[in-house]
Length: 81
Image 1 (cartoon, rainbow, N blue to C red):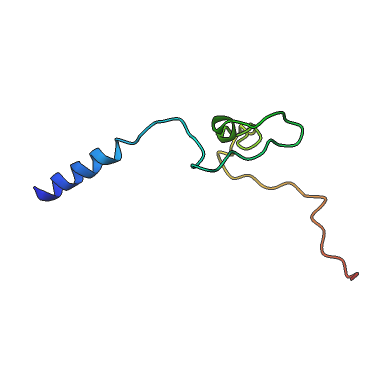
Image 2: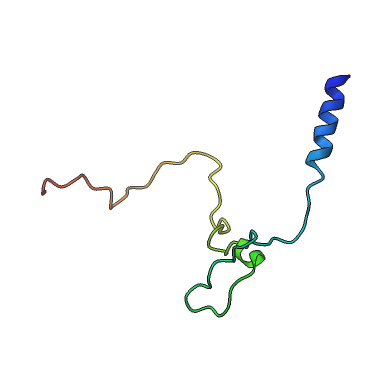
């Protein structure tokens, strides 16, 4: 019974996080603007990832194993040093 009460209390504490807007620490400022940008960016724009960071998958995953085709660039190492 005591374990159940403790786990419920911890679960309740975990769900009561504050959802205030993000701000820099007291006495600090946001990073300077990137080259070519005007002004500083907000915390929300800095947290958004560009599409290149997580691209969509453009190929279908293989459902079964298939034989690999011959790779013309799979060459043995050269003896020249």
